[in-house]
Length: 74
Image 1 (tube, rainbow, N blue to C red):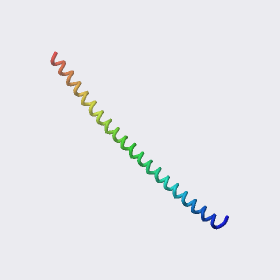
Image 2: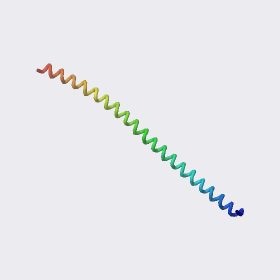
Image 3: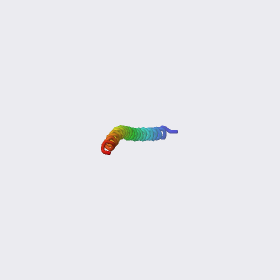
Image 4: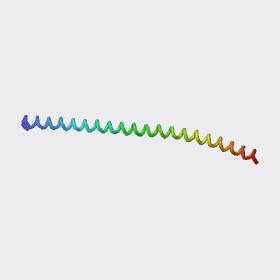
């Protein structure tokens, strides 16, 4: 292999490695975005679950009051 061929090959390999690094960086960014979306979804589900539990307790209290009022009314 002549020096010229080696230099061409070396430059080609450098460009390919740089493209690969760039692709890996893009994938990392995409993965981070997915993690961020999933984390946000999990947080929202937790908030929804807490709100649902609070509403269920409130409904139970209301049902008990309604039953008491029904008994007093009859």
